[in-house]
Length: 279
Image (cartoon, rainbow, N blue to C red; front, top):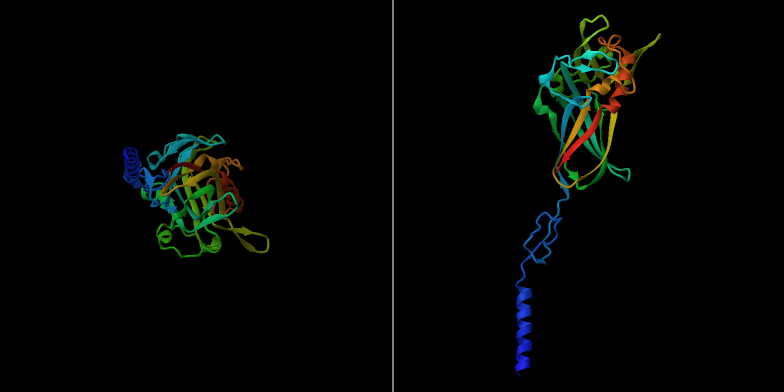
């Protein structure tokens, strides 16, 4: 009889110990994971999407540049000209996140960056992003033909971002200005302005061409929730890849210069890269 009572007591004690285990989410990858939980109760919750902000910054061959550095002849481009930056404004549109299977997530919209306006450095994408692994980010430098519509964007109109109708209309994609020391050792101003539509003059006609560039930046990363991603512009790349730029030849009146506009578009492909990603 004593043995039977002891056995029953052990069962009761074991049952009490099991029933007293603290319940909760025991999956450490869950949003509501509890380090004190000893028994999973099926309440684990997981983030399925997050808001992503792109943060834009500029450097010259790895040396950071801000508006505080404007008009200082501190930089030497690939052609050997000592130069400064006095203005940098640009626009991007239609951001994409790429997946390894070839699919992409598309975000309709545009953003205008002005190095003299710190508030413009950050762009929160207009819709949330799925929690997933991605292989890179892309966007249009400027506007596609469908979006490059005269007078369509109030904020860009206020920023004097429109392109003259005689040059094709629509909008700029960059206004980059500065000064450089020319071959006569004079300090000369330059205007490196790029347009989303350009004009080619032939012997018989004037032809307009779309000049926006689609930028693709490859880098494997995962979005686990709300995230911040740095997008870096290396200003030095505008002068060297793939076209070596000679400011003594192309320094002003570049907007109607068809060949110069084509070279700018080609050089834009290597200017941007993905920097630090913060979750």
